[in-house]
Length: 187
Image 1: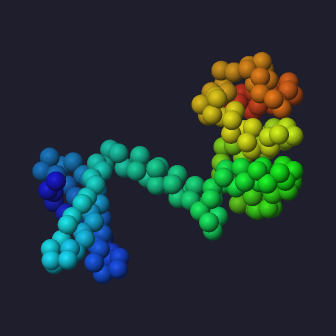
Image 2: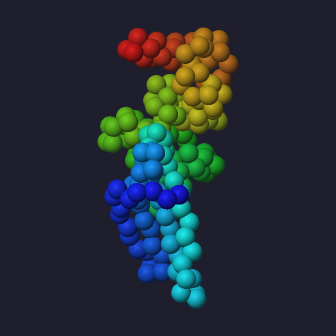
Image 3: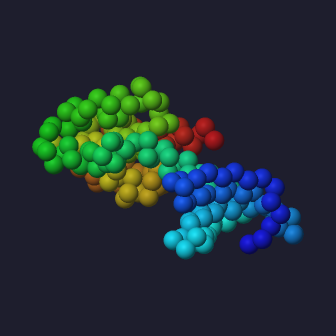
């Protein structure tokens, strides 16, 4: 797509690959970002690929990139996610969250990096406190969030819909519903 170039940034990767981030305007005054990759071929020619994102969708792009970078920050050196590490801990038959590396424990993470850096299942795990002998609080929280379609699904729930999960009794279900109601009243 052709457009009037308003601003550009570029960088190279390994000499034969170049990236361009162009902010452009169409003849009808629509603005867009064009992200291009140019690869030099063996014969000296260039193969170009690009993606265009229009201004009205910038917030989606920024949100998606923010989410991606946030979740990448929770990968270990081997590229395992927090959830994979939690599963590995269960497979090795260690006893729940107390046996985890302190940097991976939800409560300790909250204290060191802040609540905004925790995954949804880690926040819920802190709220419910413990899981069952066969399932830690993070795995239980993950299963609950999946079943309810995220936190939004809890708002229409009741005590019995939460208590159907092993490890969730009336006290934990009441705490979850109370937090959801507090959140609703804050809006």
